[in-house]
Image 1 (cartoon, one colour):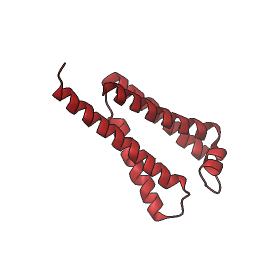
Image 2: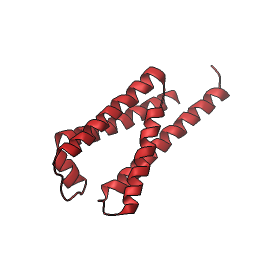
Image 3: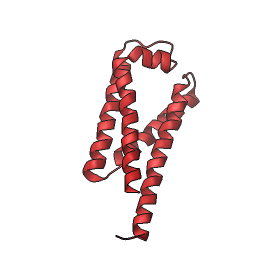
Image 4: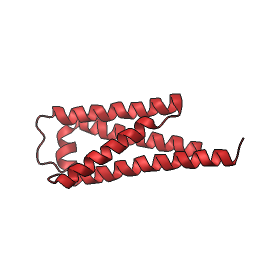
Amino acid sequence: MARLERWLVILIALHSAAVGLFLVALPEWSAITLGGWSQVAPAFFPRQAGVFHLVLAVGYLIEYFQYRGITLLVTAKCIATVFLLASTLAGGVPWIVPASGLGDGLMGISIILVRRWRASSERAWPR
């Protein structure tokens, strides 16, 4: 279970880092071509979002590998899910917004479930 949890945290961090790198390096392509937005002006805002994704990815890894924690990851995914799905309900957003909300929600739920599964299996089978 510990190995599964570790790899899940790494994969979620890699996802956030990839999103961040695309937004920083290719803001117009990321937001317009891939994301479905009609325009992005100025490019500062997608780049800022990209840096934010990179900071979160690093934070996920630091918290996990220093403290075995997932609080930052779960909190960020919960807030992102609520924001993205509320924005979808408000209307006027491209397909990437509800898809990202769903993806963030699934990532958050998956790490919570794996953590609970790991905790219950460690209690059931002491070493």
